[in-house]
Length: 128
Image (tube, rainbow, N blue to C red; front, side, top):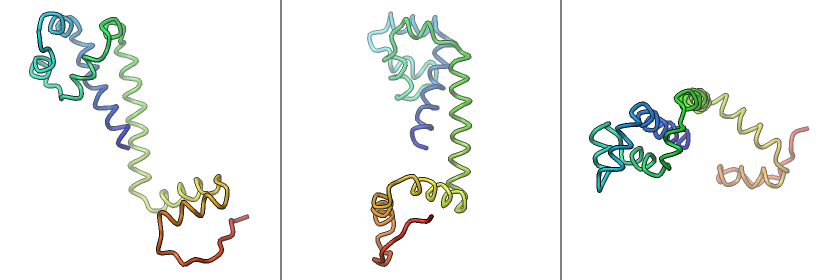
């Protein structure tokens, strides 16, 4: 979830940069310290301004609004699915069961022990 939210935050900044590309390029070329100027002019966060400055200018010019918006939409859907799963004990348990069922039984037991160390130490048999 943190990775999705972080990427969405950066994409917001990149979209602002794309929509104001000429001004962003002028600031980068003309300012000795462009980061604070970008942050103030476009109300960007430190992370967003840093992401814009780390992009090569040719990549910034090639950014397409549709690509950015497409990635944003996909990440928003993923975020909604993650929030739904995290908000539902049933969905969360189903996801854990699914993940554990594809693991070898000894690895699954180790994972369960780390998550729930208070479980009694009984011999565990995987479901059939």
